[in-house]
Length: 305
Image 1: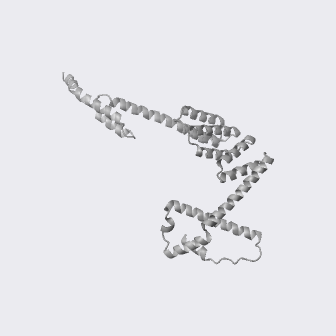
Image 2: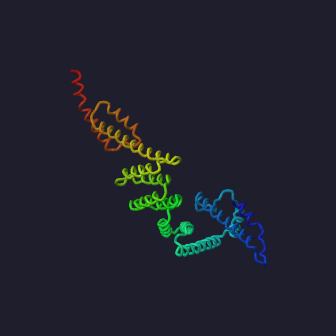
Image 3: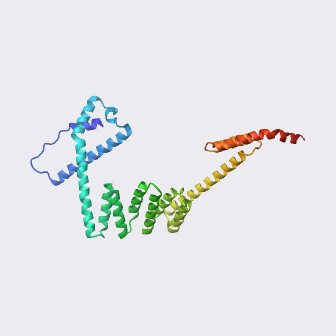
C-alpha cells in the first residue's frame, strides 16, 4: 500500500493550462479522481477494522522512510479536507436532485421513474423518515415491484425493535403480498413470522402465514419448493422440541422416585441431555437416592423370605 501511494505521489503533476479543458477530458479526470478517493476510503476503513485504530503507525512492511513517503502521498492526494469537500459536494448534489424530484412529483404525481429515483436518493442519504413517506406515497398510487418491496421490508425489519414494530412490519407484509404474486415475499413473510413465535399467538401466526403462502404460491413451478421446505422444517423443529421436552419430563419424573439402578438412569440422562442437569432435578434425585437406601433393607428382607 505504502509503495503504491508513494509512487502515486512521486509522479509529476501536469502544469495547469491557460485555456479551459475540454468537457470530456475534465469529466474523465474528475471521475478518475473520485474513483481513487472512494477506493482509498474503502481500503482505509477495511484496514482500520482489521488492524485497529493504530494501524497507520503499525502497518507491517512499512519502513520509516516509506512512512514519510506514504504521509506525503496521503497529504498530496487524499487529505481529509479533500474527502470532506468531495463528500459535501456529492451530498449537495444529491439534495438538489431530491428537491428537483419532489418538485416534479408535485406537478405530476404519476411519474413512476421519478418516485423510484427519489426513493433511491433518500435511502442513499439515510433520510429514513422521508424515504418511508416516499415509499408510502408511491405504494398508494402504483403496485410496487418485488425488488422495491423487499428493499422496503428489509429496511423496516432492520429497524424493528419491539412488538409494536413487529406488528408494523406484519402490516407492511400484508400490503406487499397484495400487489403481486411473489413467492420470495411470501417466503420472507413466513421466515420473519417465525421470529415472533415467542409472542402470544406466535405459533398460530406462523402457521397461518405459511398456509396462506402455500395457497397463493405453493404451486409455483420454480419457487414454490422453498416455501414447502421452510414450512416443513419449521414444523419438524416444533415436533422435535416438543419430543425432547417430553423425554426431559420423563427422565426428571423418574429420577424423583426411589428406584433400583437410579445411578445408571442419572448417568444416562447426563449423557443424553445436551444441557446441564438443573439443580432442582439433582436435589430431587439425591432425596430419592436417600429414600432408596432406607427402603433397601426392607425390600431385601422381603425377597429372602
